Amino acid sequence: MRRQRTAQWIVAVPMMALALATIYPMLFALNVSLKDRKGYVLDRLGVTQTFNVQNFADAWTNASMGRYFLNTIIVTVISVALLLVLASMCGYALSHLAFRGSKIAFLIILAMMMIPFQVIMVPTIKVLSSMGLIDTFAGLIIAYVAQYLPFTVYFMTSYYSGIPKEMTEAARVDGNGLFGVWWRIMVPSGKPALISMGILNALFIWNDILIALLLMQSPEKRTVMVGVSTLRGQYPDNVPTYIAGVMLTVLPIIVVYLVFQRQITAGVTAGATKG
Image 1 (tube, rainbow, N blue to C red):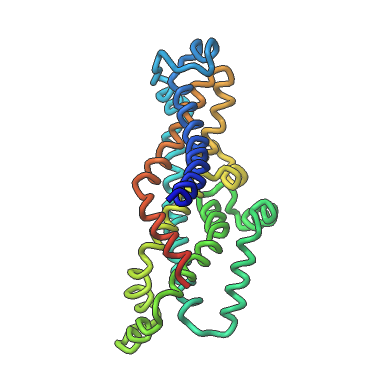
Image 2: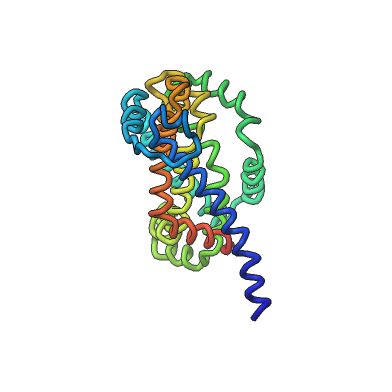
């Protein structure tokens, strides 16, 4: 019994420390965002006494946050939809269809996962520039799909490998073509993994600043993370308003994670154990 309790504490203490290290910065930022300028200058670490919600209104209106949110939603929804469709099709092909070069293709996908965007940043910009896609939503979507597709394909391939091939063979016998098998068998069976990948990719794209900053040059086409970074220049001496803008960008991510945390955990766990 003592050994079991000791083992539980060994796991619990680091996890509590990690939770505290994660939650405290959020609470600190929320506290700062509710201060007025004078209160922040006089007492940066103390608990706010003003609860100045006007900071959020100023950050939203003066920094065009509404437009940035709309741009980000458009790019995120289209990018995630393309990622899920392409990754689901590729995962089906690599896990259930026997064709020459399938193993090599899978190894290439694994190798692409190891390449950070910073390595291919310059070639990517040159290719998109030659296609006239710089400072366009289409170019940004293509960049996001290219960046996050390898991992999504790998995950869906791993998940689909756990689905018995007898199911797809039976569907083919019933008269379904490749598309019919994918749509009627693979997509419904892979729903947990698709939900997890959709949420995770949406979080990755929403939080991105590097790719959007490089490709989107017009102020009216900025994404929310690039837009909030400009707040620091607009309010150099008003930190609470700047932090309020940061909190506005983080709030949707927190809400999405809290609502779908079970689906994320279930999908990731299933994808890790199948295949």
